[in-house]
Length: 107
Image 1 (cartoon, helix red, strand yellow):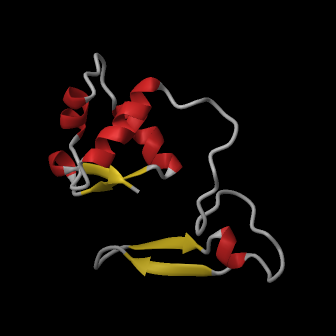
Image 2: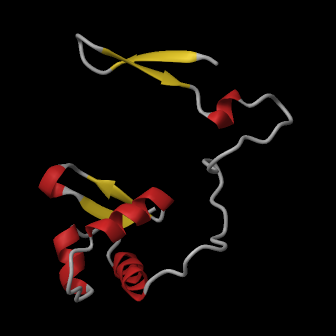
């Protein structure tokens, strides 16, 4: 395994290992998530109605929307933070900005 040390601040260092895709010997397929290619969604739970509405609303707003704007636009009756986190983890959406300035856009 190859270790890479990346300075995060002037005082401390963080050690990162090379991803499986980079460390896999030539001719062997890496295990785990696909990083370079986006596989077609197969199996698992079907996307919820609320998740579909969020994706369609983000498609209508390429500049992105905040979580609160999304919640109002899709008329969600409950917080949507967990749904957004799951979509981000699957790679459906990405976040731009930090803190209260975060905007969600389609990946």
